[in-house]
Length: 350
Image (cartoon, rainbow, N blue to C red; front, side, top):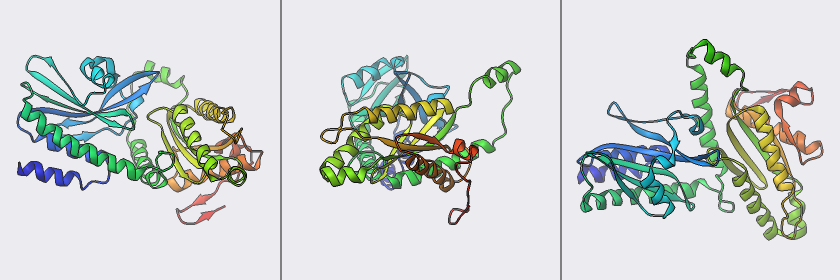
C-alpha cells in the first residue's frame, strides 16, 4: 500500500495533464497482476469517433506520442471496442471484457464537460476481483478529480474555453516539439509514394487571432449582460466550427485564438471563412448581427512571439480594411500591404 500512496502523492504534484496521465498509469502498473496499461485518446474525424493510444508502456517505460491524432497510423474506430462503446453510450463509469483467452481488460472513461476524450485501459491475465476494482476505482477517482481541478484552472470562467495562460504554456511547448520534429532527418520512401504525396497540398498548422467587431458598442448600447451573452454564443459557434483536436482559446475581452491542426492553406481559408459566416448569420438576441475579423499565419517558422505577432498584424489589417474578413499574413506581405518585422522575443524591429 505504501508504494501506491507514494505514487498518489507524486500524481497530485503535477500541473500538466499529460504528466498526470503518465503518473496515474505508473501507479496502476504497480498493482499486482497488471500486465498492460494505456491511455486512449478519443476524437472525431469525418463524423466518426476514433481511438488512438496516447500513452503506453514500451520497453518497460511509459511513453507518450506527440503526433497529431488525426494522422496517427495506430488510430482505429471506437466501434472496434464494443464494450467501451456501449459503456460511453450508457454513460457508465467502467467497462470490462475478455478480448482473448487469458486477457481481461478494464476501461475507465474520463468524463469531462459531459463528454469523453480520454480513457484508461488496464489489462491483466485473470478476471478483475471486486477488491481489485475498488482499489483501481479509488485511484482513478483521485486522478479524475485532479484532472478536473487542472482543467478548471486552464479555462476561462465565462466561456469555458481555454485561457491565455494555457495558450502560453501549450503553444510554447507545441512550437518546441514542432521544431524538434523538423530537425529530425527525413525518411525516404518508395519513389511512387514520394510522387503521390507531392501531388497533395502540404498539411500544416495554423494560428488565427479573432476579434469581435465593434464589441465596445455592444457593451455601451446593450449593457455588459448582453455583451457576455455574445461572448458565450461566439464561443459555442467556435466549438461547433472546429474539430476536437484543434485548440480554441479566449485571450480576454473580445479576442479569441484558434490553433488549427494538420490541414492545407486552402482548407484553412475555407474553415476560417466558414466560421466568420456562421457568426455573421447568427441571430444574437437583442443585439442582432455580429461580425468577426480574423488574421492567421502558419506556425511552421518562427518563435511563439513572432508567430502570434504576425497573426496579430494580419488581424489589425483586417480591422483597418473594413472588418468582417479573413486575412492571411503571408499574402499581405507578398502583396506589399504589410512589412515583415524581426523580433528577438523582447524587441521588435521593422
